[in-house]
Image (tube, rainbow, N blue to C red):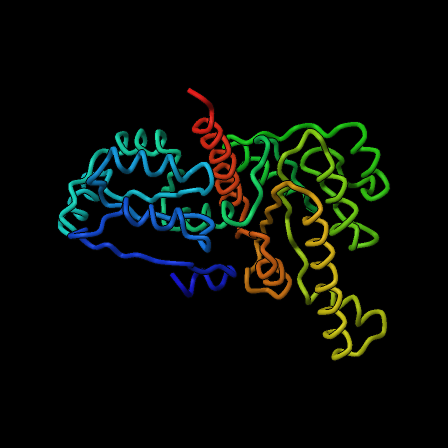
Length: 312
């Protein structure tokens, strides 16, 4: 887990392994983590809950100020047998734990990957005001796949306002599309992709979330610079400088807008420009499906939190 999260620029504030809960249980650990100032979001791996009422009450006291994500693995008959042989915990059916988590305000993950994905977005991003997503891409295919993923995750893709369309017009060629997704196809100035265009989309009143397709392979930038007359060494150095500058511009833009921004790519997360975004706190997922599910968790938390805070 440490190696996996390190690659995403994430870490643990505290980790507990309670085993068969002989004298300390998951509820007591939640109480500690709920008060821990270094913990932004709580992730739970659950094979069974022994004190159901205490779990619900404790979670509801924490969720208004700190998200909780849970992976429950005992819901199937095979999972139940494995959990019982492992810790002696008597697991219950999935539908029971769905209800427990919903009453508690806990976000349920369906896999270990989702557990960390959800913790990542919930611990890194501001709460969205709604489920309306605007997608920025410079290729039709990745935009269409992202739109489909968002629809399957229960997110909405609103039409852009007339004001935003006017703002985008100078930056989107006739071969592109000023719809949602916003498909640039290409730009005369690549810097527009990291400042003017996302700025206009973040200012869109009809959008609560920005989802961006990142595709900036260093080899393409290096090749373009070599065509401009730079030597190979000069092109390598200059491409790094350009990528770093654009990343810093993009991050500066995010700091001035209180809306969640998530990226996705079909390239490696270990590429230099993607690592720069990760190191600066921007979640970038390998493909739009994981990004969309993580955004759904973000929206779900905001809704559950509001329900708990509503006066009865």
